[in-house]
Image 1 (cartoon, rainbow, N blue to C red):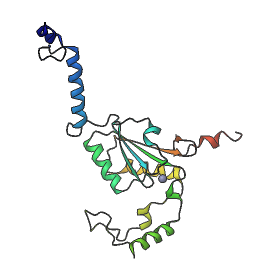
Image 2 (cartoon, rainbow, N blue to C red):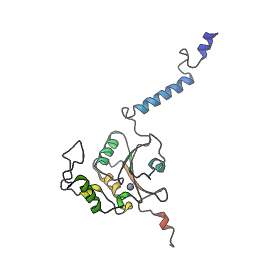
Image 3 (cartoon, rainbow, N blue to C red):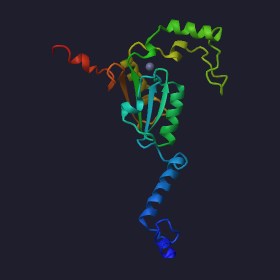
Image 4 (cartoon, rainbow, N blue to C red):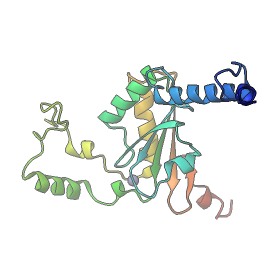
Length: 211
Ligand SMILES: [Zn+2]
């Protein structure tokens, strides 16, 4: 009987609401809705995490931290530095999106250690065709320029990557827009070994010499 078969089919409109197949479909539909609307629904990242990392092409940020799609927000810039826009992004996510942890990833052989301040400033001035004091730093806020501030501070070149990593963590921990309850940690990714280490913990060197 065709009508009987129809009634037994799990997708039949006559199937009962607590049919297991329906429950799976409902769960999947809910999950898709949560994914598509997670910001509007106030759903945080799966690990309540923001990662700030250097943009260097050798840093596999997700792999190094074991992150899946949806786990974290990731901000990458030259050097993995806490710039004004990192503060903007961090302030928004920790205060409005329930992000509770920030991880900074810097790395060995960073391009920020590959030239002197002077060489970089000279190159940028050449690109701009003159002094940089009045060059707008944000297209939306043309009046925001360096003024009397140090261009070298803005470019953020680096002498020591471990020290730089600790400084970025300090900037975030001390910033008034980042609540004290947010955990902030930093790691140095070693491009030579593919491993993360805490800043200052160069284990390889430590165990290669007599105590
Ligand atoms: Zn780098």
